[in-house]
Image (cartoon, rainbow, N blue to C red):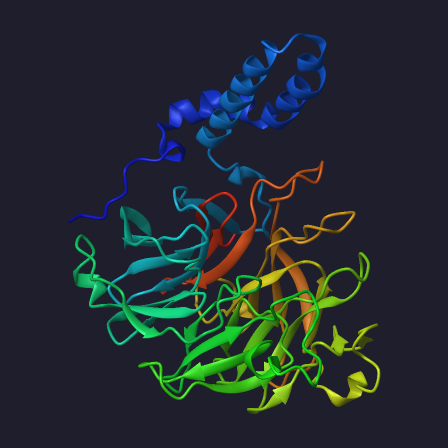
Length: 413
């Protein structure tokens, strides 16, 4: 049976998007006015009208294409829409045949067949999964994370119209949904790397029996056997990659909440050897002791970050850039998708940053690469979730809020 999706509202004709875009941009304001001002002035028959009008505005918003013209990039760079019909798009991986697989928060895994950097066909190759955000390609199969499970779609590239039933690689992972969605990837050693976030904002003291199962990064054989912990004290990593020169694992980590607008930082970390502890729950951001758990556990006893990325930016997917399309200075630098804050008085993140750093983790420098997903009134129309360089040297950015994937290219100005 074919798994090609039926058309979604976001895939409406472009002329309809253009006509409805102004209405869509006004939708939140007008809907709020209808609800808070108009309805209370009249009897109950107005309530259905208000609800219907709000629904109409919401539908109009769905028809509007993401306004990528608002994205600002360095000189010479250009951003275009690769796909705007991938709801909840998260991690991306590319098969050797050129099919882009995309995990999502919506229970589905998407396959975008690419030709000349354009999507020629979009399919759903798995559905009904629990937050299958992580996807990884290995030996002809697509691996997918689904909270407590890792499943595998065998020979999927040649069965896109009739996907196989997912085979269970492991179903022994924790089932907690709090930080339970998992970015996954295969390392240079051929093992599948699977993290497990903390099931809380801050918890897991030294005497907690669950400490060995959470706030860590693990790896397993492709068949799911021999799952071992390689890094501890990692609150919630949703992005990692291996340095192209040293082959060491580098990863982002999200800092805890409820310590103020500017504390603690999200982090970029480097695993120089197996077994390092990065501080959670005792130390945050490299130098901030936790007010509840930090006593007796000084930050000096843990591995410091390579770079502090800022508090509450929600650093997610990251990749090293090894292509040749971008200027030479971009090689081996790191692109990081910042999903953006949700509980800060002034929002931050909602952008993609670039970090240049030595292979040994020294001399890190961070700069904004792409921004504009956050409106001047601090409402966001998109939230970057992952980045992925393509073989041609362009860079993909997934956006789970707008349900879109963008492609960034460069031409010397």
